[in-house]
Amino acid sequence: MSKPILVSQDTSTMPELASIRQMVTPCYQCGFCTATCPYPLLGHRLNIRKFVRALQLSMLDALEQAWLCSTCKLCESKCPRGVPITDAFVKTRRLLALSKKTPEKLEQVLWNVYENGNSWGVKSTEKLSWAKGLEVKDASKGVKYLLYVGCAVPYDPRLYKVARSLVNVLGAAGLDFGVLGKEEKCCGDPVYHAGELEFFEEIVNENAEKFRRTGAEFVVTISPHCYNTFKNLYPSYGADLNVLHYTQLLEQLLDGGKIHPSRKLDGRVTYHDPCYLARYDNVVEPPRKVLESIPGIEFVEMRDSAQDTLCCGGGGGRMWLESEGGRPSDMRVSQASEVEAGLMVTSCPYCIQNFEDSVRRLRLGKPLQVFDLAELVDRALG
Ligand code: SF4
Ligand code: SF4
Image (tube, rainbow, N blue to C red; front, side, top):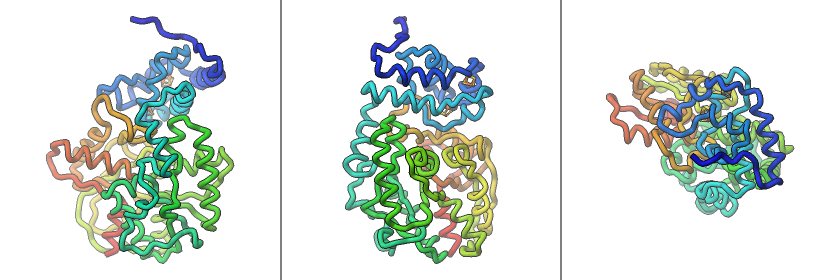
């Protein structure tokens, strides 16, 4: 076994290392985190307790494990010492970015954002391809609600349906809303998680100014990742936005009598909480309330629900990185199948992509369809 590298030769990164060490100092190596994280169970080499120990000792050769975590915060939520594990991961990635050790695939994502303002590389001219045939207001003309579509929707035709459904529902509610279309730029989530904080700051400033010019009172996101970025990361860079995840807006519309899901839909339905919504921001009731308002649905909880939800595997930039073991989405789809659900509903583009992929690959006893909540509500409006 080669000897671990204990100290950096690069003195410029010393303050970063010291601050990471300080974050993980309270860890007393109980191992709850390792027992909680789904990745070891799936045969990945990520061992969070050992990783935290390596951070305590500044063992530099272990740091690259930081790219293996999907930043789902499950381990952190169970840590008896309150160690900010995910922030320590992100800080470590920052250190690796400073040392030019960003994985090639994430480098490509950064270039995509830089060149096209879209993490998947969708060009400006294609950013409204999902809305073909729909009348959606140009938000730059002034709106009350700015619907922020995000990078994944224009990239994946499967997700076109999600955005189209949401537009139908918001239209049925008579809401004054619009989109930025070709002017929309990535929220910066993958940039932040790649540790490129200077670039992230530029994105925050550009987006905040663009949003301000629309006069919108609320920014409504489709993705929980955009929601987290606007709500929890932008304020540290001076941009305070009124941001809603669309499930919260649907709940408000339901409570205000603006939408009436009255068409009966049959089926045994379970809901997967996206970790960036449930664990990061406690948004667990709104999607359930909306689901349960749909007549004919038999709702069933699967295990590991609400704040204890499991990650689909797409957070923290992992959507673009190779997996070296089993997929967390397979685990989650199996849990939905365990409760004999025919529909697995969620509210995150990454979850939809990962779960549909798992359903296609796994041999489940009973057919399982993956839907976004907006799609179901749209159907129930008739
Ligand atoms: S759960 Fe917390 S205290 Fe226990 S090993 Fe993990 S980081 Fe350390
Ligand atoms: S994937 Fe989730 S549970 Fe595993 S180490 Fe990362 S934050 Fe913790």
